[in-house]
Amino acid sequence: MDYQGFITVVRERADLPEAEAERVACRALRTLSRRISVGEAEDIAERLPRQLRSCVELDGSRQTFHLEGFMKRLEEQLGVDRGQAQREATAVVAALWSTIGSDEFDDMRSELPKDFAPLLDEAVAGAPRSGLKDAPFTGPLSFDEWVNRVAEIARIDRDRAIRATEAVLEVLAMRITEGQVADLAPFVPVELRPALENGVARSGGTAMRLSLEAFLREVARRERLPRAEALEHARAVLAVLREAVGENEFSDAVAQLPGEFRELLRQD
Image (cartoon, rainbow, N blue to C red):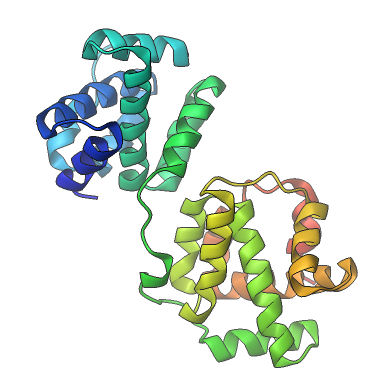
């Protein structure tokens, strides 16, 4: 996202004039950057538009504060009440997520206290979305090749392979973050991307805490099949997804899944 796009997100979501949105963006970025490590602040600055890089604090000692301290600092610096400070902080963090990407955003999240989670989650849920269907296709498997591979692995016919793929991709998109879904989308044939979009719409862009059993129930419900068949179909679709995106991208996408999901991800 370029500078004007960043400021437009802040302006529209916080209901601010253009000049005030610029001031709010810079102040909020500076305050937030003081709470994370210098290395992480440098990584974020590199990904921001040139006009905002100086807003990231790279010098001086780091500060220790929780969400309450962050909000109080913004209230004082911006001269607003708590409600407006909340709206402005959420708007800036939403623009930040859309600009630096989910992986870097998650790195930043890992350095912040856990009580920042509601602010971060609300911001991500309301952040501008890049259309999954519009991402250029760069995958090695065409739609027909993908479906045929699922059919071969699961030992099912083509129509069932299509239904299985759509069901599993939709539930996977509910279970991982929207940023992770966006990273996978270019490798998924466009005919199958509506399933990813449906999953993101269901989750609001934030990973739903589905256990393995809940994941399989969702797949089984969509396919109208018993759990045992849903398990085999999920294994097949995820195996093909691994082939399509490559080991590194696949590992990034499933890294935050609980250990119990190894049953789905194992390679026989």
